[in-house]
Length: 489
Image 1 (cartoon, helix red, strand yellow):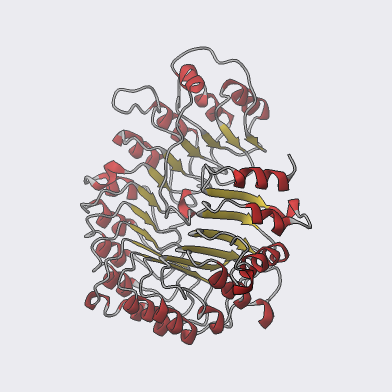
Image 2 (cartoon, rainbow, N blue to C red; image 1 turned 120 degrees about the vertical axis):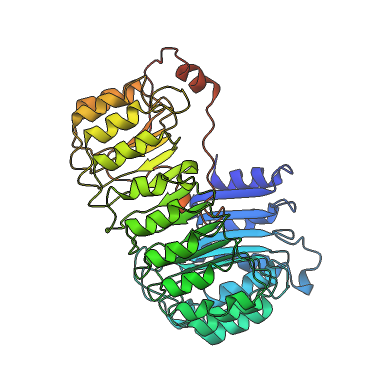
């Protein structure tokens, strides 16, 4: 079916109130692209584009804005009830912000991301003026403005504290704010958000190069009850700032990845948060002592990432699982830790914790012994390695073809994702693929799974894939016939 016909038929179906096009829409560019959307159902409340070029988006927005003008009162409005819009574009600009504000009066959730391939000029960039268009109707609950570093190290250089101050004045009702790449915004701007948005629950700031501990200096004096905080690549943040942040005792998700100046004292402060279930600490300066603070905590931790924490050793595993906090962990990332060896994984296997996802990629001291220990681990009397849904052992120097044998039945019966090094015995890997048709095998270093660490909309919420009836039947012991498998090589 032609793309235009697909959109038209889908949107005319009154059953659909949400549409996600998670691909490059430019591949289906058509001169009547905008006009096709004029047939959209007025029941559409949610729209998401994986990527849409500005040329196509501009044409669509011109149509949207035109239908909002008094002279077009007899013309049906496009997207009259749209509440949620998620876009990935070339550039986030002032014109884009103005058009969205005029044309989408029912919007409560706006998620915008760009990835410039060249430094934007002023006419194709976001400035303080553009931020003033946000939430002119006063009903916006979530705003996300992210400048990706995918192609170029670039930032929103034309936005400073004044722009954020103006935005915060009109955004007091916001419950979720995500800002990425605002390199000229200082503590003054970020503090304005914290002190103006009394309903704020989720705060996400990335590449906040001027954010310091002062942002949270008097956070205890506010009425904020934050539940989700992400402060990735905020390298001026120290243990003092995290100590003050921890006064928000309702915190459930904390992302401090790549905050290089955070150490053990920060973890001691976080250990008192009784609702914390997701903690991401990649690349921080923590040691085994800091992990022991977590181990003595009393919170229901289910997801923990310690990727690239170079000070950690094998001793961090018994320190973490000595108390009760580690026994709820289902997703665990121990990748890129140079001193982590098979002894750590043996300690982990002895705990018999039902870990669902384990990443130990690029650990030079991890070898076949770790695979054998995990394969032999029984959880609650189940089969060998019964809980493991994802295992990533890519580029672990001591893994040999012998380890591949431990992925045959009956070991790892629930395994769906496996990361291994492609140069291992290729025949054995191919045989494994044929014998385990429901295992996605990645051999080139791809990150595995659904990317729950970076989910923008669910904020790290992870739901395990349900087994269909055929797969359940096969896993219960019936012989599986050879079939195609999703192998990323």
